[in-house]
Image 1: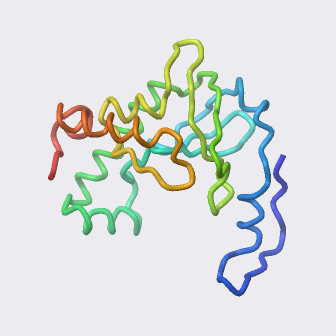
Image 2: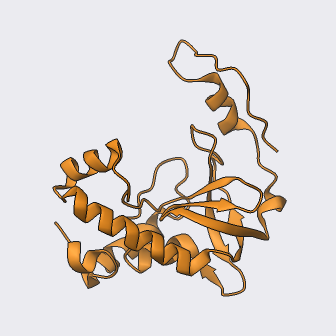
Length: 178
């Protein structure tokens, strides 16, 4: 179990020592083999019954709330912020319907936590035989962003994303942009 450090020490590299340590501490993977999702916070982030936040690797949902990220995404993509808000809400609803109040299994990759200490993993619904991250991408509710070193399913996610966009599935059906 990870214990967060009370103090923050900045290294010469500009990285926060607490965050660097958080990324290096191994998670007890057995504790995440039958754990309940109690709340979907964003289309790509859930709260587990143990209080931990879990980000779904490869899933990058548009922000629903007005944030600097949504503003930046709007400028980068040319999609109005109001449209990104609607897209974000669609992704949250899809993810809620898929996994909220259900028991999941989490598979971890090279980095188990991000720089903020949030868990990162691949989620499976064993009762339904569903790979959640892949299903969200397949149904067209995310672009399937992959960042090294957590890229175990990169080729699968990119294929699913391309196919969903070509079929105009999910958020791509009304908001598709090239």
